[in-house]
Image (cartoon, rainbow, N blue to C red; front, side, top):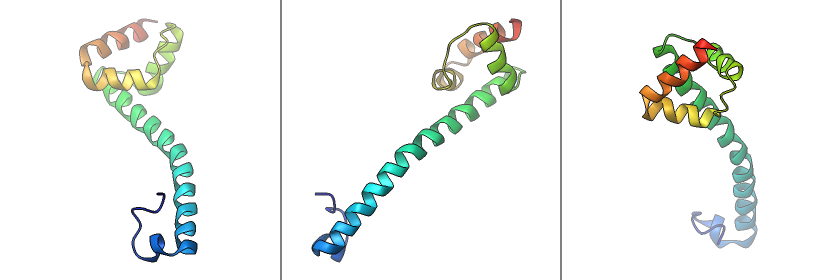
Amino acid sequence: AYTKGQFGSRHRLIKRANEARLKSMWYATRDRRVRKRDLRRLWITRINAGARINGVSYSQLIFGLRKANILLNRKMLADLAARDPQAFAAVVSKAKSA
């Protein structure tokens, strides 16, 4: 089942199939960690873009949010910046005034 999508000997021969399975499991384990890193980088990029439209840098925004005790995580902030710019602008203004 693990080597179903493999070509040639990687799914036919037991030894090669086992090597392919082990390698794929190793990649899957590694990439679960990499995905977390990549998503965090994407969220920060989106927040920064939205923040700069509202006249503030990413670091200033995060500092202001902490000061104002606004407990929105980066995933939610990025979603607001991308989908609801007016709500994001309201959050930015609260952070600016803190």
